[in-house]
Length: 87
Image (cartoon, rainbow, N blue to C red; front, side):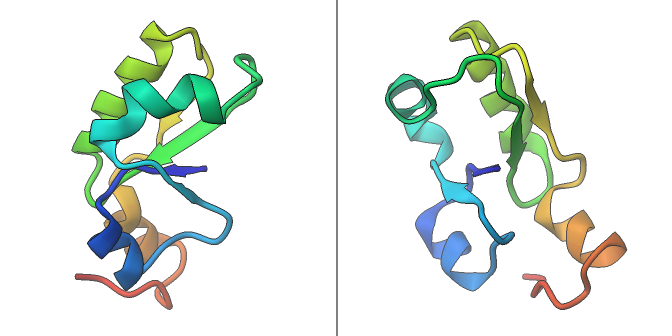
């Protein structure tokens, strides 16, 4: 699971097991950090817009199984785990 928010947002809340890779660093970090191009990559941000952009970048870099978590961590908190702080 990849969190493409900024470090300040990651400090507020995160999903367990997520790796922080801010959107601006995705093009440079992806190939170095993710060795299995066929592995599923779940990507999220606050509301879902940055994660959609990150998925586009990841797919262009050869990660066809990158998927955005719709609604981001905000929607996760509302629908799945209300213990995740909202901001």
